[in-house]
Image (tube, rainbow, N blue to C red; front, side, top):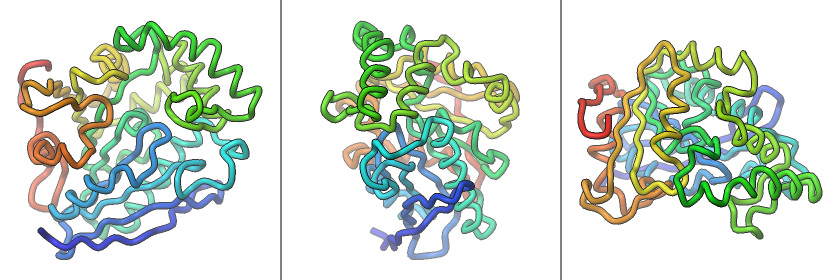
Length: 297
Protein backbone atom coordinates (compact mmCIF):
# COMPACT_ATOMS: atom_id res chain seq x y z
CA UNK A 1 0.00 0.00 0.00
CA UNK A 2 1.32 3.44 -0.96
CA UNK A 3 1.89 5.92 1.83
CA UNK A 4 -0.59 8.81 1.87
CA UNK A 5 0.20 12.19 3.39
CA UNK A 6 -2.79 13.92 5.01
CA UNK A 7 -2.77 17.61 5.89
CA UNK A 8 -5.39 20.11 6.90
CA UNK A 9 -5.98 23.15 4.75
CA UNK A 10 -8.02 26.36 4.94
CA UNK A 11 -10.26 27.23 1.99
CA UNK A 12 -11.07 30.95 1.57
CA UNK A 13 -14.50 31.94 0.24
CA UNK A 14 -15.61 35.04 -1.64
CA UNK A 15 -17.40 36.49 1.40
CA UNK A 16 -14.43 36.09 3.72
CA UNK A 17 -15.39 32.88 5.49
CA UNK A 18 -12.85 30.09 5.80
CA UNK A 19 -13.76 26.45 5.28
CA UNK A 20 -12.04 23.42 6.75
CA UNK A 21 -10.49 21.17 4.14
CA UNK A 22 -8.13 18.24 4.04
CA UNK A 23 -5.61 17.20 1.40
CA UNK A 24 -4.71 13.59 0.74
CA UNK A 25 -1.36 13.70 -1.01
CA UNK A 26 0.26 10.78 -2.83
CA UNK A 27 3.74 9.90 -1.65
CA UNK A 28 4.99 10.03 -5.26
CA UNK A 29 4.34 12.63 -7.95
CA UNK A 30 0.55 13.01 -8.44
CA UNK A 31 -1.05 12.34 -11.81
CA UNK A 32 -4.29 14.24 -11.22
CA UNK A 33 -6.45 16.07 -8.70
CA UNK A 34 -9.87 15.13 -7.32
CA UNK A 35 -12.30 17.32 -5.38
CA UNK A 36 -14.89 15.38 -3.35
CA UNK A 37 -18.04 17.49 -2.89
CA UNK A 38 -20.12 16.20 0.04
CA UNK A 39 -23.74 15.25 0.45
CA UNK A 40 -26.18 17.27 2.56
CA UNK A 41 -24.97 17.71 6.17
CA UNK A 42 -22.15 15.22 5.57
CA UNK A 43 -18.70 16.15 6.92
CA UNK A 44 -15.63 15.64 4.79
CA UNK A 45 -14.28 12.99 7.18
CA UNK A 46 -16.98 10.60 5.92
CA UNK A 47 -15.02 10.34 2.66
CA UNK A 48 -11.65 9.62 4.28
CA UNK A 49 -11.37 5.98 3.17
CA UNK A 50 -12.30 6.86 -0.40
CA UNK A 51 -9.97 9.89 -0.46
CA UNK A 52 -7.11 7.78 0.90
CA UNK A 53 -7.66 5.21 -1.84
CA UNK A 54 -7.72 7.90 -4.52
CA UNK A 55 -4.42 9.22 -3.22
CA UNK A 56 -2.99 5.72 -3.36
CA UNK A 57 -3.85 5.77 -7.09
CA UNK A 58 -1.73 8.90 -7.49
CA UNK A 59 -4.55 11.44 -7.25
CA UNK A 60 -4.10 14.50 -5.02
CA UNK A 61 -7.51 14.63 -3.30
CA UNK A 62 -9.37 17.39 -1.45
CA UNK A 63 -12.26 16.92 0.97
CA UNK A 64 -14.01 19.85 2.66
CA UNK A 65 -16.81 20.89 4.99
CA UNK A 66 -19.55 23.29 3.96
CA UNK A 67 -20.07 26.17 6.37
CA UNK A 68 -22.05 25.12 9.41
CA UNK A 69 -20.86 21.50 9.04
CA UNK A 70 -17.98 19.68 10.72
CA UNK A 71 -14.81 21.72 10.93
CA UNK A 72 -16.44 24.68 9.14
CA UNK A 73 -19.07 25.17 11.86
CA UNK A 74 -19.00 28.25 14.05
CA UNK A 75 -20.85 27.51 17.24
CA UNK A 76 -24.43 26.28 17.11
CA UNK A 77 -25.95 25.77 13.69
CA UNK A 78 -28.71 28.21 14.70
CA UNK A 79 -26.21 31.04 14.22
CA UNK A 80 -25.39 30.00 10.64
CA UNK A 81 -26.98 32.20 7.96
CA UNK A 82 -26.15 30.05 4.93
CA UNK A 83 -28.69 28.89 2.38
CA UNK A 84 -28.31 26.32 -0.41
CA UNK A 85 -26.89 28.83 -2.89
CA UNK A 86 -24.31 29.92 -0.33
CA UNK A 87 -23.32 26.27 0.05
CA UNK A 88 -22.98 26.09 -3.73
CA UNK A 89 -20.61 29.05 -3.42
CA UNK A 90 -18.61 27.10 -0.84
CA UNK A 91 -18.27 24.25 -3.33
CA UNK A 92 -17.02 26.74 -5.92
CA UNK A 93 -14.46 28.00 -3.40
CA UNK A 94 -13.21 24.45 -2.85
CA UNK A 95 -12.64 24.00 -6.59
CA UNK A 96 -10.76 27.31 -6.80
CA UNK A 97 -8.58 26.15 -3.92
CA UNK A 98 -7.91 22.88 -5.72
CA UNK A 99 -7.07 24.70 -8.94
CA UNK A 100 -4.59 26.91 -7.09
CA UNK A 101 -2.85 23.78 -5.80
CA UNK A 102 -3.19 21.61 -8.91
CA UNK A 103 0.19 22.49 -10.44
CA UNK A 104 -1.37 22.15 -13.88
CA UNK A 105 -2.74 18.65 -13.26
CA UNK A 106 -6.22 17.74 -14.60
CA UNK A 107 -8.98 18.14 -12.01
CA UNK A 108 -11.96 15.82 -11.59
CA UNK A 109 -15.10 16.48 -9.54
CA UNK A 110 -16.69 13.69 -7.51
CA UNK A 111 -20.04 15.02 -6.31
CA UNK A 112 -22.12 13.00 -3.87
CA UNK A 113 -25.85 13.82 -3.79
CA UNK A 114 -25.87 17.58 -3.08
CA UNK A 115 -22.27 17.66 -4.29
CA UNK A 116 -23.55 16.51 -7.67
CA UNK A 117 -26.40 19.00 -7.76
CA UNK A 118 -24.11 22.04 -7.35
CA UNK A 119 -21.82 21.27 -10.30
CA UNK A 120 -23.23 24.15 -12.43
CA UNK A 121 -22.27 26.66 -9.72
CA UNK A 122 -18.54 25.94 -9.75
CA UNK A 123 -16.00 27.05 -12.35
CA UNK A 124 -16.61 23.93 -14.38
CA UNK A 125 -14.26 25.09 -17.10
CA UNK A 126 -11.49 24.14 -14.66
CA UNK A 127 -12.71 20.53 -14.66
CA UNK A 128 -11.56 17.71 -16.92
CA UNK A 129 -14.55 15.61 -15.87
CA UNK A 130 -17.20 15.03 -13.22
CA UNK A 131 -18.52 11.88 -11.57
CA UNK A 132 -21.90 12.40 -9.90
CA UNK A 133 -22.85 9.77 -7.33
CA UNK A 134 -26.38 9.10 -6.02
CA UNK A 135 -27.60 12.52 -7.10
CA UNK A 136 -30.75 13.88 -8.71
CA UNK A 137 -33.69 16.20 -8.24
CA UNK A 138 -35.16 16.39 -4.77
CA UNK A 139 -38.70 16.97 -6.05
CA UNK A 140 -40.81 14.85 -3.74
CA UNK A 141 -43.01 13.22 -6.38
CA UNK A 142 -39.90 11.70 -7.97
CA UNK A 143 -38.66 10.13 -4.74
CA UNK A 144 -38.54 6.34 -4.38
CA UNK A 145 -42.01 4.98 -3.46
CA UNK A 146 -41.35 4.40 0.23
CA UNK A 147 -39.92 7.89 0.74
CA UNK A 148 -42.64 9.48 -1.37
CA UNK A 149 -45.25 8.51 1.22
CA UNK A 150 -43.54 10.47 4.02
CA UNK A 151 -41.71 13.45 2.52
CA UNK A 152 -44.77 15.66 1.88
CA UNK A 153 -45.14 16.03 5.64
CA UNK A 154 -41.48 17.02 5.87
CA UNK A 155 -41.45 19.55 3.06
CA UNK A 156 -44.85 21.13 3.63
CA UNK A 157 -45.00 21.15 7.43
CA UNK A 158 -42.12 19.86 9.56
CA UNK A 159 -39.24 21.60 7.76
CA UNK A 160 -40.75 25.10 7.48
CA UNK A 161 -42.35 25.09 10.93
CA UNK A 162 -39.38 23.82 12.91
CA UNK A 163 -36.86 25.90 10.98
CA UNK A 164 -38.75 29.13 11.62
CA UNK A 165 -39.66 28.26 15.20
CA UNK A 166 -36.21 27.09 16.35
CA UNK A 167 -34.00 29.06 14.00
CA UNK A 168 -32.55 25.84 12.54
CA UNK A 169 -33.72 22.41 11.44
CA UNK A 170 -33.24 19.86 14.27
CA UNK A 171 -32.57 16.92 12.00
CA UNK A 172 -30.64 14.90 14.56
CA UNK A 173 -33.51 14.90 17.01
CA UNK A 174 -35.97 14.10 14.26
CA UNK A 175 -33.62 11.49 12.74
CA UNK A 176 -33.87 13.22 9.39
CA UNK A 177 -30.75 14.26 7.45
CA UNK A 178 -29.00 16.13 10.29
CA UNK A 179 -29.05 19.57 11.87
CA UNK A 180 -29.22 22.23 9.16
CA UNK A 181 -29.17 26.03 9.05
CA UNK A 182 -32.68 27.44 8.72
CA UNK A 183 -31.82 29.15 5.44
CA UNK A 184 -30.58 25.90 3.95
CA UNK A 185 -33.63 23.93 5.00
CA UNK A 186 -36.19 26.53 3.95
CA UNK A 187 -34.69 26.94 0.49
CA UNK A 188 -34.22 23.20 0.06
CA UNK A 189 -37.83 22.53 1.11
CA UNK A 190 -39.06 25.08 -1.42
CA UNK A 191 -37.08 23.38 -4.18
CA UNK A 192 -38.33 19.95 -3.14
CA UNK A 193 -41.93 21.13 -3.50
CA UNK A 194 -41.34 22.23 -7.11
CA UNK A 195 -41.13 19.92 -10.18
CA UNK A 196 -38.06 21.80 -11.45
CA UNK A 197 -36.27 21.54 -8.09
CA UNK A 198 -33.07 23.63 -8.14
CA UNK A 199 -33.88 25.06 -11.58
CA UNK A 200 -37.01 26.66 -10.11
CA UNK A 201 -34.81 29.17 -8.26
CA UNK A 202 -34.27 31.50 -11.24
CA UNK A 203 -33.56 31.82 -14.94
CA UNK A 204 -29.91 32.39 -14.01
CA UNK A 205 -29.72 28.96 -12.38
CA UNK A 206 -31.14 27.27 -15.48
CA UNK A 207 -28.62 29.15 -17.60
CA UNK A 208 -25.81 27.86 -15.40
CA UNK A 209 -26.78 24.29 -16.24
CA UNK A 210 -26.95 25.19 -19.92
CA UNK A 211 -23.34 26.46 -19.98
CA UNK A 212 -21.74 23.28 -18.59
CA UNK A 213 -19.56 21.47 -21.14
CA UNK A 214 -17.75 19.19 -18.68
CA UNK A 215 -17.99 15.45 -19.45
CA UNK A 216 -20.31 13.96 -16.82
CA UNK A 217 -20.76 10.40 -15.63
CA UNK A 218 -23.65 9.78 -13.22
CA UNK A 219 -23.54 6.67 -11.02
CA UNK A 220 -26.92 5.45 -9.74
CA UNK A 221 -27.90 2.45 -7.64
CA UNK A 222 -31.20 0.62 -7.76
CA UNK A 223 -31.36 0.29 -3.96
CA UNK A 224 -30.90 4.03 -3.32
CA UNK A 225 -33.72 4.87 -0.91
CA UNK A 226 -33.34 8.63 -1.44
CA UNK A 227 -32.87 9.07 -5.19
CA UNK A 228 -34.79 7.29 -7.95
CA UNK A 229 -33.76 6.99 -11.58
CA UNK A 230 -36.52 9.49 -12.33
CA UNK A 231 -34.93 11.95 -9.90
CA UNK A 232 -31.61 11.64 -11.67
CA UNK A 233 -33.06 11.99 -15.16
CA UNK A 234 -35.01 15.08 -14.06
CA UNK A 235 -31.85 16.82 -12.89
CA UNK A 236 -29.73 15.84 -15.88
CA UNK A 237 -32.26 17.18 -18.39
CA UNK A 238 -31.13 20.75 -17.60
CA UNK A 239 -27.71 20.15 -19.17
CA UNK A 240 -27.82 21.39 -22.75
CA UNK A 241 -24.17 21.44 -23.87
CA UNK A 242 -22.97 18.16 -22.45
CA UNK A 243 -24.57 14.73 -22.54
CA UNK A 244 -24.32 13.06 -19.13
CA UNK A 245 -23.89 9.30 -19.27
CA UNK A 246 -25.71 7.25 -16.65
CA UNK A 247 -24.37 4.02 -15.18
CA UNK A 248 -27.10 2.40 -13.12
CA UNK A 249 -26.14 -0.68 -11.13
CA UNK A 250 -27.81 -3.06 -8.73
CA UNK A 251 -25.98 -4.65 -5.78
CA UNK A 252 -26.91 -8.05 -7.21
CA UNK A 253 -25.26 -7.28 -10.55
CA UNK A 254 -22.16 -6.04 -8.77
CA UNK A 255 -22.06 -9.02 -6.44
CA UNK A 256 -22.07 -6.92 -3.27
CA UNK A 257 -24.37 -6.15 -0.36
CA UNK A 258 -26.56 -3.04 -0.09
CA UNK A 259 -25.12 0.20 -1.51
CA UNK A 260 -27.99 2.66 -1.11
CA UNK A 261 -27.38 6.40 -0.98
CA UNK A 262 -24.10 6.43 0.96
CA UNK A 263 -22.62 2.98 0.52
CA UNK A 264 -20.30 3.59 -2.42
CA UNK A 265 -18.04 5.73 -0.24
CA UNK A 266 -17.77 3.29 2.65
CA UNK A 267 -14.59 1.25 2.93
CA UNK A 268 -16.49 -1.98 2.25
CA UNK A 269 -17.13 -0.81 -1.32
CA UNK A 270 -13.45 -0.54 -2.13
CA UNK A 271 -13.64 -3.42 -4.66
CA UNK A 272 -16.03 -1.28 -6.73
CA UNK A 273 -13.90 1.85 -6.91
CA UNK A 274 -11.52 0.49 -9.54
CA UNK A 275 -14.31 -0.24 -12.01
CA UNK A 276 -17.03 2.30 -11.19
CA UNK A 277 -15.00 5.42 -10.43
CA UNK A 278 -11.35 5.30 -11.44
CA UNK A 279 -11.89 5.01 -15.23
CA UNK A 280 -13.75 8.32 -15.22
CA UNK A 281 -11.10 10.40 -13.41
CA UNK A 282 -8.69 12.35 -15.59
CA UNK A 283 -4.93 11.91 -15.15
CA UNK A 284 -1.80 13.01 -16.96
CA UNK A 285 -1.65 9.49 -18.41
CA UNK A 286 -5.14 9.48 -19.89
CA UNK A 287 -8.29 11.57 -19.95
CA UNK A 288 -11.43 10.27 -18.29
CA UNK A 289 -12.82 7.43 -20.42
CA UNK A 290 -16.30 7.66 -21.95
CA UNK A 291 -18.82 5.26 -20.47
CA UNK A 292 -19.64 2.26 -22.66
CA UNK A 293 -23.29 1.70 -23.46
CA UNK A 294 -24.91 -0.94 -21.32
CA UNK A 295 -27.93 -1.91 -19.22
CA UNK A 296 -29.74 0.98 -17.58
CA UNK A 297 -28.40 3.64 -19.94
